[in-house]
Length: 314
Image 1: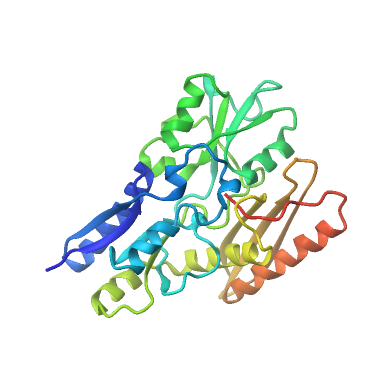
Image 2: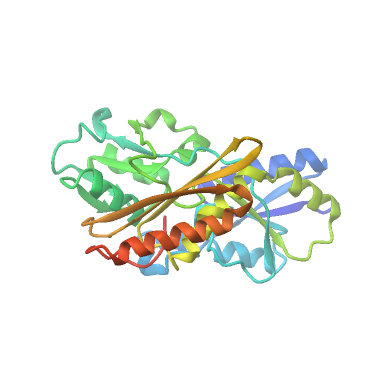
């Protein structure tokens, strides 16, 4: 029997995430599921800022092509890296339960955001993180960095920067939470839309009924609703990876009705201003709520003296 093939980026984090999906599918199907490593443009070029490389899509295009051309049957992505527009011939067949969407600080000497000295250098490749950091601590110097988790943490160890900001989910999956100096609250740092969630893509036409069933079992309804709202906001802002956009949705049950609360952040890349708003409604209207909040953010921006940069989140 031919093994099911899962396309993945070659980084340690991508392989770890993809292997977790492969193991879950193998358990359900009783079949071998193997990884197919794909080198993406974003992995090959570790020096050019993501915004200058085209932002959204630099980590997923080659992986998607592997599924479309039959080199693999499925692809696993960090959902925050996935463009909001659907890829022709592909579908998001499963969004498993989300890990933590928090950002974290890894700093020298165990320093926190509050105890870092004036002028300290904080490394991040994310305009979203940079913008919110400038709101929280305008006295700090934000330094653009690229590379995998180990590479960025090494910058702190080597003294190149005083701290870096990373996603908690990635560190948790790699077993590196012990390196964290501070877990950042959503009140201070909203995550990228979809942060902490994974997306499993398959071909739109999939004749393997057992695989379709197994993928459906991996799908988590509440996570899908939450990220649908966040990504609808991102899409409505016509954003790509260069703009400071943050969003996080939570679900709750109120009198038997599933409600969704969505918070959104839209900032100026130079840190001179930002807009933060939220909206609450029936979770069945997740996509509409995302578009509604985007409209409110843009309206508030138009009346502000600080205009945000168009683009997306990272």
